[in-house]
Image (cartoon, helix red, strand yellow):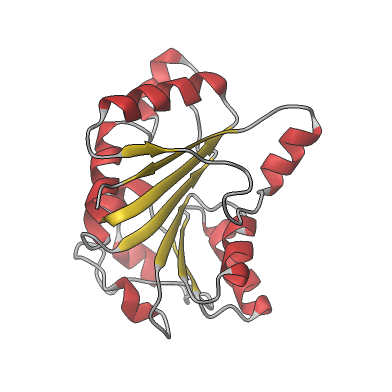
Amino acid sequence: MNSQMISVRAAEPNELVPPDYFSELDVAGFFPSEGALEIDLGCGDGKFTLEMAEHYPERNFLAIERLLGRVRKVCRGAEKRGLENVRVLRLESLYTLEWLLPENSVDRLHLLCPDPWPKAKHHRRRLFQEPFLKAMVRVLKPGGELLFKTDHDEYFEWCEEHLDAFEGLERLPWGDEDFFYPKTDFQIQWEAEGKRLQGLRARKPA
């Protein structure tokens, strides 16, 4: 990631622009108040992040997205709604987990409908595998949680297998009424077609 290429444009409102893309980031310093930190990896159009931030004003939300157009949309959506507890970082998800986020700093990490890379020759590109799980456990606080959803049945089975084989997380039940969890536009469209999303919830042992 070339930090000079990113810094030539003006930052959007609510955008988090690290002073150094090769050093650990003081995430808390970019929010006006202290609070539990939640990360939305690959936030897309930001609907999920913005609704969560409205519902949980006492928590801070960092949305990670690599596409500039989406970053701008989420930043402006947060500004329009007056959400001071939202920041958006334009960067790759795995790089952010491995290098920028401090150890034991995240309370909940959300991964919703990542690219399933359905062809077998592309499975190596899937995010949900051991390097991701190790990086995620590094940044989660003891007792912190991963919340994952996908519309792709084979990818869900893949993720279950990788999670079950990984010793750093314990599976938790996840019912629809357990806590507020808004649906993305993609999920709403998918369910309107009679299809389903499947979810995994896991916790880093305290």
